[in-house]
Length: 341
Image (tube, rainbow, N blue to C red):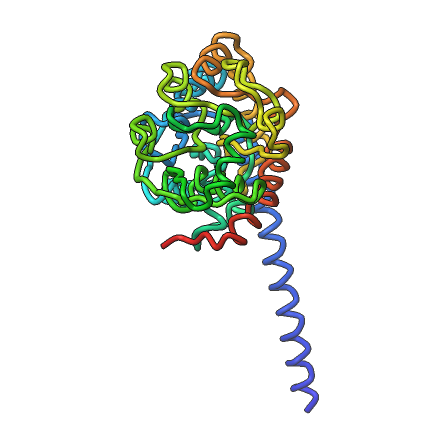
C-alpha cells in the first residue's frame, strides 16, 4: 500500500509540473507575440483600407463616403477603397462588415437604416450595437415633409388640419416597409393623430409625387430640394432642430407647428467589434480631418448634407447618438407592428 501512496503522490506532482510548464509556455508565448501585435497597430495602416457601403453606387451614403475617402487616404497614407455591397436593405453588406477581421482594414458605413430600423424590422444574424465599434459620426440628410403641387394646404399646420379632415384619403410614398421614409410617416401620424395610406416603392416615389399620383412624402432633403426649387412640389418643413444651411427659407418642423418631429438619415463610420482602440483613434482622426476641410464641407453642404459639430464626431458621441436613435425609434416601429414581409 505504501508504494501506491508514493505513486499517487508522484503522479500529483507530475501533473502540477505539467500545468506549471503549460502556464509558463503561455506566458512566454504571449510575451513573444505581444510586441508584434503592438507593432502592427503602431504601423497601421500598411495596406489599402476598404469601406463597405451597403447600398448601390450613386446613393447618398455612397456619395458621402467617396468624398470623404478621397481626403482620408491623404491622411492615412494608404488607398481607401469603397466597396458597394447592396441588397436586402443594407443587411448583406452590414453583415459582411460585422464578420470581417477586426484589424482596421475593413470598415462599414452604417446609419439610420442599417443600424437602427433594420434592427427592429428584421431578424438579423448580427447585433447592430454589440457587433460594431463606432469610429465617427459623419453627416446627415434631414427628412423633408413635401407634398404634390396641387395640395391645398399652404403650410404645415394647414396640411395637418387637411389630413385630419380627410382621414385615410391621402397617400404617402415610401421606399419600402420599414424604410426611413415609412418610419418617418408612422412617427408623423403618431405626433399629429392623422391617418393616411402608405404606398411602398422599390426606389424613389418622387416621380409619382411630381405627377400628382400620390399626395405626400417625407423624403431626404437632398432628394427633394431640386423638385421644390423647380416648383414641382411643395415643401412644408425639415425634420431637424435647425434650418438647413443650403435651404434656410424652409422652416423646421418645430417652427412650423410640429414640435419634436426630428428624424433624419444619418451616416457613421464603424469597424468590426474588437478592432484595437489605437486603430479606431487613427481612423477617427482621419475622418475628422477630412470633415474639417473647407472644400469638403462646402461640397457636402451644397449636396444637402448637414455636418455634425466637432464634439459629435468622436467614437463615444457616435455610440451615444446611435443608442439614442434606437431608444427613440424602436418603440415607434414595434408599436406600429412594422415587420418585414
